[in-house]
Length: 171
Image: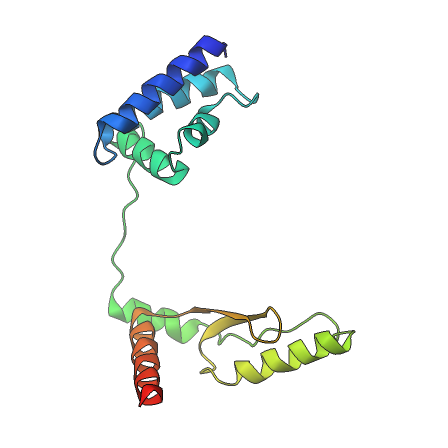
């Protein structure tokens, strides 16, 4: 792709970005046009759409979201449709799911530090209901990251428990 095309794309995309208070289909149209132009040329030289978005400080996720919306509006792409699932089907799925197991390590921890982290992780895993799937990442003596897959109701329950605990601690 010629340098003048990259400059023109940068100018047009920048103008489209600045012209809209919020990204919209017109913005998506300009991005789509240039993505197609760069894709046709097989740009792998640092002059593609992603590089222009970075140069203009435009979030790539936002840009590709509006490209997809534009593609749907012109019929170039079929929209993703959520299919409702009945409570009966959800119950059947839950009944057939195997409970998740606590994380295991391949082999045994080799150093004393690793053994302490492993023991701490296992101890912490006992604090959660067994049906909750989670991961504990130990980043040292005080820093932990805990990620869990929870339902919306479980998140609400957990938030209420945390709020009650913090309120009680503050008294």
